[in-house]
Length: 400
DNA sequence: TTCCTCTGTCATTCC
DNA sequence: AGGGAATGACAGAGG
Image (cartoon, rainbow, N blue to C red; front, side, top):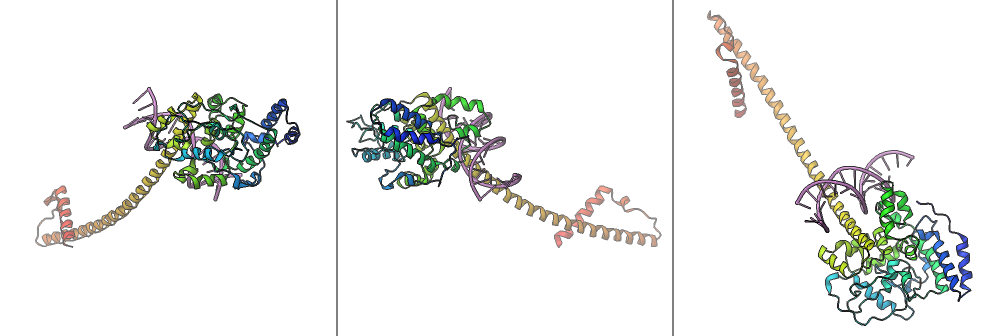
């Protein structure tokens, strides 16, 4: 874990004071500085309570389901409609062809700072206007980040609430990284933990995504927050229209958070699972920056490779199982051959004894008849002698 | 604390 | 040339 100093009490102390001053723009900047100074936003080590404690979020019934893009509540009640539009991203991508953009309502962006209101992707998705019929943004729609939205209406009360919620959210999400086995090799942006854990290519780590994400921007601070706590992930699984096992696997993964940090406007599930053609079509619908494009391609590569690795290991285990079965069969066969060899050896021994006995009888008989002694090899050359012996043994075995 | 297993990722090769 | 599959190797998490 990267070092993460305890949250400064000053951070807590300043915001309430600021709340009392409703009309000072300069204090807004100060408030932001305070918010940005909260070390928990770095996604680092903070003493948390329960891993998924969401008690700090207030009434959960007010929460709109997290669709993978994030949802804002809007004071004018447009939030749910937008939520539905966003959720429709979960529907099969090729179900419909995006039509020409129709009238798009301008939505006032006033996040209520519930648990889903912090990631850059989530906010940007909420801000990004979508076609009410197709649920797609207009082709080449510009992607705006949370704090790049010109309609942002941030009140000091919002800031105070956000400050509190951020702390709670971070605590709730603290265990998220622990749930993953991500080695973070390409997590080359300001995820302090990963940067510290990866010892292999420290220089490269600093180079890639660090270039992609400028340091210390509002977008970074919020985009790099940990993923949502388990209760929201569960809700995602319940409401998702595609395979939930895959969803759980992908949602809130580090790639998911990278995508959030970079305001990638579509889910990693789509990035990974779409066929090339559909994937390229999807990309063509948005104007992505080079870093965004690089990240999307990395996510796709990692996702594909992850599945490939799983298949590879599965095949390897199956191959091992087959080979072990073959080994068992070969051992059985070897035992049989060994027993057969022993049996043949015994037969050969018996035959040799019989032959020697017979030879001795013949010699004795010849001596008794006054014939000179001739060794048996004189009658049969050695090779022929052995072959006859073998033939005799074989015929005996066949008869048996 | 150490060891082992599982999993994600990267690098590389091949198709 | 680019994308994907396959796979060895490595590293972190967790039991």
